[in-house]
Amino acid sequence: MSIHRTRGELAVDIFFYAFLSVAAFTTVYPFIYLLVISLNETQDALRGGLYFWPRKFTLDNYLYVFENERLARAALNSVLRTVIQTVLSVFACGMLAYVLSRKTFMFRKAFSLTLIITMYVSGGLIPYYLLIKNLGLLNTFAVYIVPGLVNAFYIFIMRTFFEQLPDGLVESAYIDGANDFRIFTGIVMPISLPVVATVALYVSVGEWNSWFDNYLFNSRNEKLAVLQYELQKMIQVVENSSANAGESTEESTRIISPLTIKSTLTILVTVPILLIYPFLQKYFVKGLTLGAMKD
Image (cartoon, rainbow, N blue to C red; front, side, top):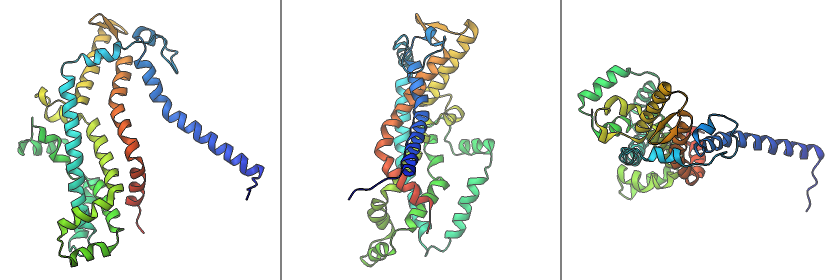
């Protein structure tokens, strides 16, 4: 059976696809521009006029970044931090969310209200620093993990998702003699992959991009520096050098500038997330939709 389309419907489709094409191009082009700048020779890039491809191709900007001796250790710290925090935070938030999703839990409303308050009210940076100091977390790797194990926003997303699961699953497991921990790990989490992937993506992106806690709590210990913190220091060095020497500066017989270095660093820190996201996209969209809505 053939479907005849009116001119109005065809015009709407054309407009719709044209709008989506423009939106997609607007979203992708900034990354293309940064890639072009990072692959172009510095002095030539300062002239401007680069849009879709390098005018003078070079890898000097990337070589300059990778010549930093502390970068490998910092990258390892960032990877360890991201992986450990993602696993532990998803598990911790999931356990609390499962408890709050049970209608038989007596204090579920009081705990939920307490978590909501933490989303709007903060004790401030100085009390937070004093708390970290009194807990003995200064200059330790644990300061990257312990303070962020529980997040109210992630808990509510997972709780809402858990509340939509059939009650019969939990009740039948109780009848079979399973306890709450067994139900959570063996039944609830395996069938909640969409919301788990959603929270895992949130946590991993946040941890991968984090550097301010390194500056506050671990700045005296170079062995615990994370990748973003080292890259931020590198940008400061280049900016200070260029401010004293002009628009660009020469390092190790290589001319560099803040423009090309910032573009290079942005590409380097964005690529890992871009490689992970396609594998989680279908779960991310479904989990975020179901976890944010309640019947």
